[in-house]
Image (cartoon, rainbow, N blue to C red; front, side, top):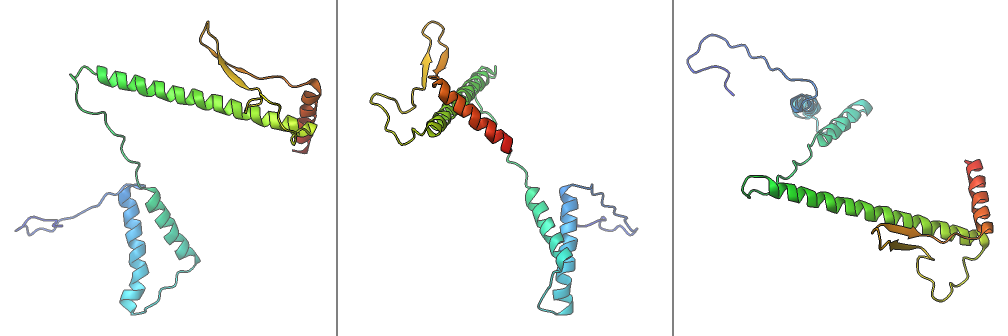
Length: 181
């Protein structure tokens, strides 16, 4: 760009202030590296460029910095509309929070059931009952049930407790496992 007005005869001093760590600073360092990289090809007439270990590393670091500096997309704003009192936004925020909490609760229950299944399989393996067929009427979750209390509406996980020998076997296995770590 132009740094003086048309007709101005006095010299103009231009000072570029570039803060360290900004996009401009990164661009200046990239441009200086590219200039030094291609000066050998363009100015000296050679058709090959060899990058040594440090130059290649600097080049790859600059590429990494440039790609990591891409900013995250801006969050979407709420839809325009309404009468301006903000009630629609409050309702949508409450609905989103409710959906989020339900998802988190469901994930917690799923994790708990998965852990119970793992412990059940572990107990069967310890006792050598893995290959035996399950009895008729047994559920896929081997007795694990999630029930809702009719009086309070609170959900509970019902987990049948195995026999004392099974619990002792699991405790011994975990004890041996912890000793090896």
